[in-house]
Structure formats: structure tokens, C-alpha cells
Amino acid sequence: MSKLSLDRILQSQGFGTRKYCRALIEDGDVAVNGAVVDNYKATFDTGNLVLTVFDEDWRYREHVYLALYKPADYECSRKPSHHPGVLTLLPEQFEWRDVQPVGRLDHDTTGLLLMSDDGPFIHAQSSPKRHVPKVYQATTAEPVTQALVDELLAGVQLHDEPAPLKALSCVQRGEHQLEIVLEQGKYHQVKRMLAAAGNHCSALHRSQIGGLTLESLGLEEGEWCFLEPEQLALLVP
Ligand code: URA
Image (cartoon, rainbow, N blue to C red; front, side, top):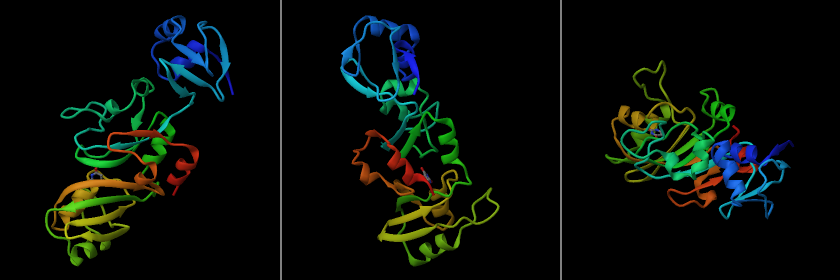
């Protein structure tokens, strides 16, 4: 636990520049554990600290770990070009904190997206050495056949890949529906694997990462939530 001045605390949580945070405090817009504090030099232990900023409560967090139910037509890239970026779905202070998506979903893919401002966490989660299974629901243009399922399980060769890539599991869920589990996170992997196996992915949804299911989070499309330690523990392979 560390003791910090209130202006530094607010700044660390993404509420703006030091100057702006000082003004917020002096204007009486900030409460600490329920009591308004208008002296920006006042110091507080950051453990168990709840800040109220413009009547909204925010627990102090050294880092944030978020889950977003990504809708279609949002881009994960830092500089989105054709659609709004996923950061526009989050409160503004997360952009100030430099929250980034953990890996990427294509602009037309929906589902579970992790986001964080913890660089080592993002790096570890995105590492190719980390074998966390990810579960996708793919809608296919052509009907799903047993031959397609068998081929995806046996492995398909993609351009630029040294060896065929296999699905960890692949189950037909409907005439045009496939549940596919992948361990790797290669660029457009599901779509490219389906194309290489002679079909076409017309819609894609990620429902699970490791043991963390989107359903368990109870989010609607476009909604986000904090992930707590017990949920983060489900991401460990
Ligand atoms: N595979 C894809 O093809 N697209 C995604 O968005 C995720 C996995």
C-alpha cells in the first residue's frame, strides 16, 4: 500500500492531467470513501480506496483488467480506420490509462475481448507460447460436413505458416454452425482455416477464453465489466 496525494491518485486512475484533476478536486467534484475532499495535497493509502467522481464510484485499481462484449463494426486497432475503435465503448478514463485490447478480434467478429493497461499481462496473454484455448462459434456459408470437421481437426495448411494448424476441438452445432476451439491466435485464423478447408466463415463469435465464458459475465453486446482475481485465474492455461 502506498500513500499518494489525491491529485496523483486521480491522475493515475485516468481522470485527466494533474492540472485538470486538481481543478476537479478544488471544485468539490471528488469524494474519498464517501467524504468530499477539496484539498488536492491530501494524501491517502491507495488500498481500499473508493473515489467518487461526478457522483460515480470508482475503486482505486493499480491496473485494470476488463472484459468487453465486442459488437460487430468496431475495430481493435489503435488507429481505427473504417469503424469506431473498441475504446469508444469504455469510460473515457480507460483511454487515459492506456487500456489496450489483449489480442484482436476482426471488426466483424463479436464476443469476448479482454482489455487491460497492464503491459506484462497483455504481453503474457498474447504470447504464442501461452496455450489458452479460445472458443469460437462460426457460421459457415456452405453446410458443415463431417469431412470439414475432420479436416480442421487433422490440420490445415495456411500460407505463411510453417506447419498445418489444427483445431483443438471442432463440433458441428447446426447445418451452418461450427464450434471451434483454437490454442493459437494467428491473424484471421478461424476464417483462414475455414477457407483453407473449402468453406467460408460468414459470421464469427468468441464465447470463451480459457475457463472464462462470456455468458458467465452476463454482459449485453457493447457492455464491459472489471475482471476480478478469481476470473483472471480462469485465464491461466
Ligand atoms: N479468427 C478470425 O478469423 N477472426 C477473429 O476475429 C478471431 C479469430
